[in-house]
Figure (cartoon, helix red, strand yellow):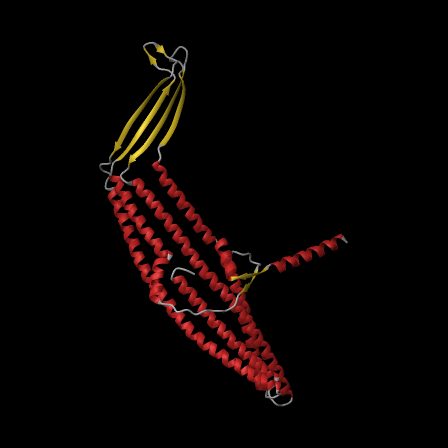
Length: 421
């Protein structure tokens, strides 16, 4: 009896878990989860933290360096009483001048932090773009599967009607075979649409880092508000907001500071030092002395490299090449952004025109449905004719949704090209 109760409880609990595996998500919720859970975002955030720590490390050189060392020694066999000696050394060192290396290293680290932040922003833009595409694609594939299901039901109704006509001698066998073949094709298309849903679910789960068994029910509608867009304004906005532009601008400044850092290797280094020494005894004319003997040294130290085998020259040439590469990459990036924006702009205009055509088609089929509904009520058309009209209207409405989907994808691509989604 206890075993049966346990099985019942386990079954109920398992059913609850299965039901809990399907979650409803809006687009905003999906984006929020992706920005919070996506590992690519988390990795880039860690890179920013490392850049902050490197900046703190570079600033540490501005502060003095203080060190303490001590020694305990015991002399055996040399003195009659084998005395022990304790010595201590306290050293303070402050760099005064290092050829500009310190300040340029700090600036280099600051620009490195800007690069890391721009890379994170770029990753976020790409992630939001991918989430929007996956979300709306999943939404559209579900609409497509529902439409194919209705087409399948409509085809089955036509087949049933044709079978009755065939049995009454009003239809030929070839007509029946053709409709059977059409039904098989519709079933295949319907199954393919279900497979597309699974593929889109897998992609969206991967972007959101959700568990494999979780099913996502996207909550949303295909709505749009077409806006007038200007390519020139979009390009100016892109050059101002695109994180890639900020990334390579910061990288260019970092390369310039790297050149100054290398040049510092040929300049003098000046630092002040203070050393305090303490010993427990000394050996002199009077023999062993047990009192502490303290003294300190204050000095200014200068070092100036004269010749390093042209090592600094080679490093300087490498830094100059890095600067040229960054400048060329930035120029190429600006061209690529302009091209990307142009394509997105043209695609957006094209989708707006196509959307207008689909809207007119919907109006035509809705009007046709109204006419057939009235005639059906008057007994002038069959219920199968009315069902065909309803299906045609739904197909037109789906085509409009598909056109809105294309518009949303083009609008998202345009927004991403301008540096904001």
